Image (cartoon, rainbow, N blue to C red; front, side):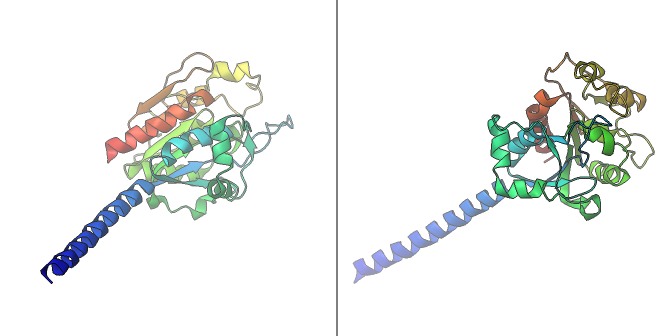
Length: 259
């Protein structure tokens, strides 16, 4: 009888321990699954000026930061100036990260059904990231709704980031004190030399590097197609597609410091 009682007691204790361990494991998994939400901005513009050549967001500039941030538990949402399906450029599925993103059912659905700026609940996001692609030069700089969203995220102690032509979205962001977000900060982006190298310096509506300098940015750059990422006061910028993965890592580093 005593032996049976002890066996029963041990079984109960074992169940309790198992339950506690399972709860702890579940909490850890949930914590890893959801560290916070990050808003990715992509262009709605699909033509390079009057050339008739297609453009859009550059796939690798979305997929590489996405992989870094998603793998560490952040949820990504997408917004574009017009909402709906975002046009894509740089469509290279030989890049395994591009392929991974494109074949992810949930995220493929998200980027083909982007939010409109009016649908964004700014308080939900710990960071905003502007992806590049030449389309960004035509519709991100003058979008006042997106600029207000980014300013609010920044002034709520969040992070503002961009890569390649994505910093076009930063040029007109103003803070509550009336200053431009980039004023006095180290910034980089697709350079004037890189624009000339791809033969589009007379097609884009403005030279991005020059415009950022006009806004007070301390522009930094490396040679053509070299990786270059700058972090300054919770603003993170990368020079070109080669820099996309490193921008994702810099966002992650900044978020860890903030936490």
